[in-house]
View 1 (tube, protein in one colour):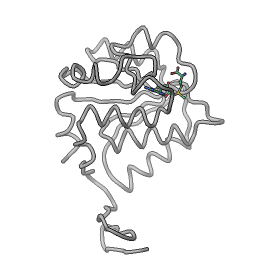
View 2 (tube, helix red, strand yellow):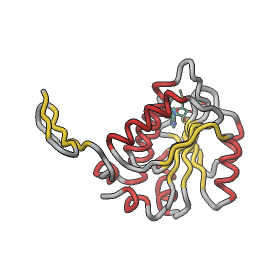
View 3 (cartoon, protein in one colour):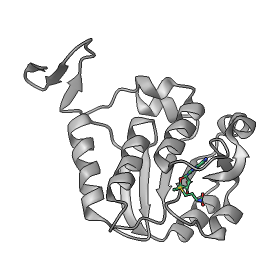
View 4 (tube, helix red, strand yellow):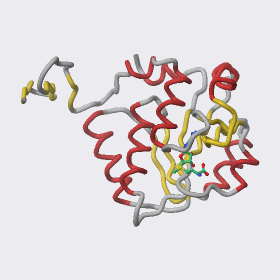
Length: 192
Ligand code: SAM
């Protein structure tokens, strides 16, 4: 299934990563971007800062494994949220303090509005709690933005995102019971 088919009801499902600290969050922010792509978002925005190593890692994955996720960095997170709402989109802030995902996912899934999913790092400013249409908890225990995002997208798409096919890939994996099988543009290679 193509990404456009998966999200056609919403047009846009973007992830806004706020609070990135370049000295300690490179890996986890990269993983937020990778999960956004692999689990069916079509945009990833790194707010308030540009970290070239994160953006470069994401570009490399998109180049090799395909897809056309839009990526951007350095825009104001607060302005982005305000503009998103101005164009009629809804803002979903993932936080352990929010309403349980089971209690709100039905309404979120049914609404055709473009979705901006906000994930934090350390302390999230009150602005995001106040501006969000939904503050959503993936259970009310602290864990991780990577886990929270993956589970949220999986619940939104009811598992269909795990069957996504990415256009323009340079390589594709052939599922294998053992070892690694990868088809490249010209040849098939096998390694164990
Ligand atoms: N105490 C912090 C807070 O303000 O929520 C936890 C920070 S946690 C390390 C980083 C991010 O992971 C949070 O901003 C949130 O987006 C996400 N997160 C962690 N646990 C979550 C949960 N149970 N439900 C939803 N999101 C969660």
